[in-house]
Length: 587
Image 1: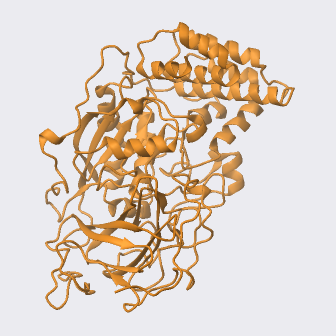
Image 2: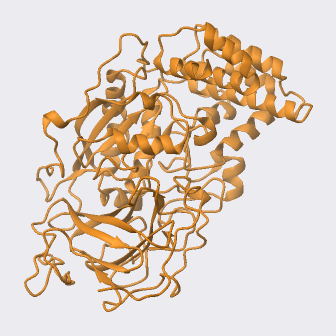
Image 3: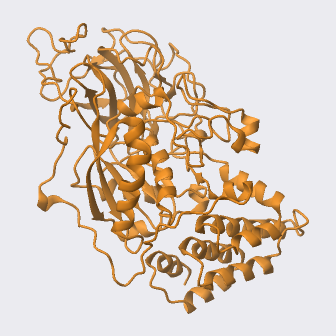
């Protein structure tokens, strides 16, 4: 039936939010009886039933281990037969109607809502998610009691339970849950699906995580990526902590547009386009050549959402994009963090704002400490610390969230086999297979970095998360304190990791630009523009400079002297596909 005709919620200002959760303008998420808030009774909500279920209301079941939330009065149960992960299509919902009810079955480890807007450029958000009894776990587009963990995006949005381990969220209640979706306009529709993760006894019994690797032209070799996934990502993170074994590992060609990603619009389009035909659920890992520092804050890995959409591909939230560093173990630490975002985990402590994750057992850090001396934070070694120093720790609650996600093919009972994929394409429908391009020199070595010589080198070597705005400002503050002489030495140090040298060079260039803007040095040891241009030119042509250093050098030249950068680009020929893409943009 049609819902009560109260004013409907609207997700205002969605475009600036996108994936930068800390930029949310949604306000504090406190349960409210106002616009779209509060609980909904069965007489003022619309019940949505899945495809395969008959029309009419789905009854609330639950109870003992042999029962399930199903239909009453002869209505088929959309969740039968019981599967490790099952999709129920809730159909098209209207922003002006609802709230809506969705039946969640018993023995559920977790479930995920996926809402699709009418177009890729339309804003969509989950305003509320409320269990049959208790308070909402999501309200006002954010986790209850929080304001920055935003469930809104362009084109598609996903939300899950559990993403917090309060009594309202965990264990997952069987029965009718209330949900409400809204857009960036008051009128509109969305197509909603729900995916439930279950076992025969409601306990986790393992599973396998399939990985589809999409490699952009000229970026990296297949053997390098195989080493990242098989030698590091699973044995160091997902198998010992989560209990997931590696599943199918497949390699496909990513489009040439993935060679250089300049903004979030390009990234969302890439996520929505690369995965058509691949099996699901699975991790879509998109290997790109270069991220824009201006847009992504120095990150080399970006998750499509918190949570993402591993259970349905071809959406704006389908996967993780990352730029290889040349160090397989380091890359795995970055991917462990970003894939955990995709499974539904937030940062233990946010960097730029006063915010922690909604889990009861994860350590957190004082805002003044994380913004000045993050190495002193108690959550430093947690996988979800916003500056990745290689931490491999998961708390019990984080494991619960991951195991309840739609990331993997689950096992229904102890000793059983993993479930088949939700979707398995015909061989002829698969994306193009990855094939090395002999014209390009590929990044193919696993070169572990030396131990950092000091805290500056350690910070420059850490993984930066695009979901943690402000971390790049910390690098610049530390760079200014160290001074130009130290930065120059670090950028020129052949023994330092390529990513460390690249960040030191980029910071050196930004310090020079700031000094020029202020008509004088910001610190006594600030480099001049002439010195920064000279160092960038020197390192671009040095035989020991890796791809990341050369990309950084081009960035410094472009920032400080576009004419000089253009001249260098026109005079340079390279067999590196990523460098060639950046040079082509300067010519």
